[in-house]
Length: 483
Ligand code: NDP
Image (cartoon, rainbow, N blue to C red):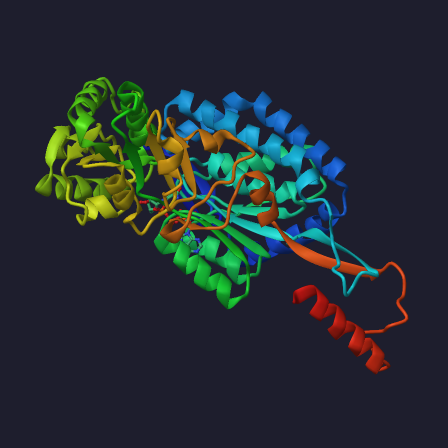
């Protein structure tokens, strides 16, 4: 009998055993890092053109096996197949964008040396860190980690990915497919197990950590990284607001707010949890929202709760919201053992836990406001700052400019997540650093300043032979320049 420790995943919709995986030991994590360090040297020394060709070949393989990837995602996350297929398609969009754009955004940049150093040439290289440890969540088990994996690879790093213990299947598949393209190098490796395996990645010294998950775990990850001076990027949750002005297209606003809050069983870090609607249109908006929500069914339009413990959080928040607010759609009975039907509650006080903590379930809390000034103040009055959605025919940009968060959609929801060019991430308890876009590429490199003389001046500044005349030149030039 094998003495390898294992853990299992279960179909969130039925609770049936899905798959059993080995728990990567501490020693194996260290070995993975050693292998990745070797691969990183080879990879970083390839030209951008060669890296781009390899990543695009990998992407072509991923998209050719979209159905296989979707099957793996459905089995362990419990989401509907069409959602899983969309997730794969968007993930591939990011692999392609990162592969195609790394050479442009990470090329050396020349800098003006300034008057005093006019004889020097100066440029900044973007240097890959080496081995990037990606610690991922279960809600979008392919899309979310690929936002780090693809950008880290395109920037010239090797990657070790620790998927969530609920959804490791798609992560393993990602590594296997890249190995088909580059069999001789360990460019992307997977370590599996619970949180302690993620912690081991940090303890054994990866060169950068990219984490997605809860704020509480993010703080533990950040503390462990700081102790080892490992740079990190944190993508945590949110309590994302939707702001609806009196001039909004109410049908579109209701439809998209509903989708944003309920799609993926509400398990989206950028999903709507709070809605602030102008009181002139609040009644009408709630009517439309209610009508549409009655047409949405758990198990049809979205799947089961992926993480069983989430049901307890959702139950607590629905209880809390109903204690103070008024039921619009659903109630405590909407929260089943595995599936949660849509819940909409109005007039919940701003300081209620259900209004302040991340629910991560298909629950929308809708409050009416006097005007958009009040909506903005309430939207910002949260420890989180991930994303927001603004609905107004005339004032969208003006409202968006006052929101303290990393991403805002005007008259739309979520779409920035599918754009390779747009940075993704938050502020405050929602995290720091960015995946996606040029910022996501820069995140996986550090700047190295390189200078050299174009010609030698008779005045040596950085020498003990510096003369009084040289000192005088420096001070005179400085006086002229800064007066
Ligand atoms: P966690 O933040 O605990 O887990 C995220 C990842 O971190 C997982 O891979 C986890 O491993 C790993 N991990 C756990 N502990 C450590 C550690 N000490 N060092 C390194 N890695 C660690 O999220 P949960 O799955 O427990 O979900 C809890 C809450 O987080 C949810 O209710 C939701 O509010 C929020 N969340 C937010 C997400 C987002 O997209 N921002 C995604 C998922 C959850 P393992 O899974 O094996 O324990």
